[in-house]
Amino acid sequence: MKINVFVTLLPIFLGFTGVAQATMIVPKPKTCPAVAAITAIGVSRNVQPNGEDLWVAGRRDQQYGTIDDWTFLIGNIPATGIDQAYHEATSALASLAFQKGPLTGPLSKWLCYYTTLQGYTAVTINPPIVSNENMYLMD
Image (cartoon, rainbow, N blue to C red; front, side, top):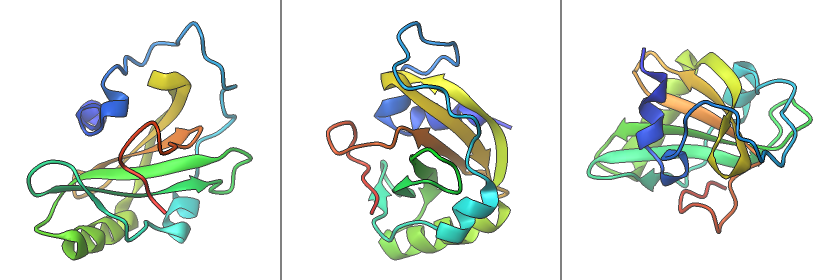
């Protein structure tokens, strides 16, 4: 199982090492969002391309049953268009499984990793992604 595959998915993860950052500003969340909470909310129809015939889906600024705000992303979804990518992402949520976290990431973010039976990697990010950090903005 390649959890770190998602590292190549988004520019925000290019520097991820899994090692604690010395200047972490945001306190570590007590827990990662539960799979049931993520699947109950689902993904936005605002699916974004991530290279040729690969897509990223998700939703930003949700609490997912925790006291923290998170962005959820699921990526490297092969599809020929937005509708197919959205359908694949939505279908993949049925097999979403928590892997590990919260772990430190770039930009003083906390990351929780998830996988699916389809081989997609997903991540929740705290604090949530905002518009000046990344082009992958989910409703």
